[in-house]
Image (cartoon, rainbow, N blue to C red; front, side):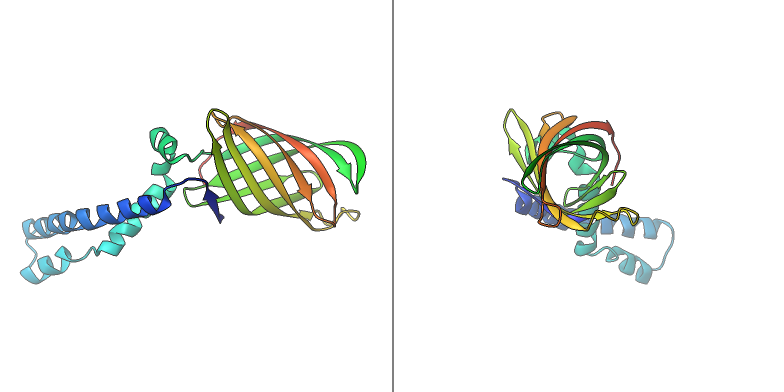
Amino acid sequence: MHDYAIDRHPKQKVLFALAFLSITITPFVNSTLSQAASSLGYSNAWVTTIGTAVPVFVMFGLLYLFFDRYLWKWAPLRKLLLVPDLNGIWRCEGETALKKGEPADFTWQSTITISQSWSKMLIHLKTEQSSSSSTSASIFHEQGVGYRLLYQYKNEPRADELELSNHAGSAEIKFSEDCLTGEGHYYTDQHRNTVGTMSLRREDVHSP
């Protein structure tokens, strides 16, 4: 997965809060470990060693991992941070409107799998002919409307699709506030030179 940007997201404040909690919690954890070691009859040397066994940076790493993978998904916290949870499998109905500057009328279907944590995400799209994976992404919240996802991707056709070639592209999808549906469009580079629309509906939810 790769990093992604979130508009108006208080990332520095979140990191500061995690650091503050680490500094605050670590002495209590070490004290508890020391008391447990004493009650089990370990020597003073062992008690002293265990009492300093959890440095602050280790506690910060554990808190960050827990927040990054799990805690951010808590609905009240996501609302405060303006972060949508897009994890899951999406059914996509697409339509190519332009190809090499000429009108086109070609429909296609795909499955989009989005894997997302608080800090990283990956958008993988698969059709019968090719598959693509995101390389960068940004999310913007529009009050009362939903979430706008912009991402860049690389596409690789199947080996037996001789008429297709590797290409890059970009997509913009606007998800509803409940993150169950999405509408958007896409553009491809000069190797494919197409423009089209996408309609998404969530089918399943999974964790990254």
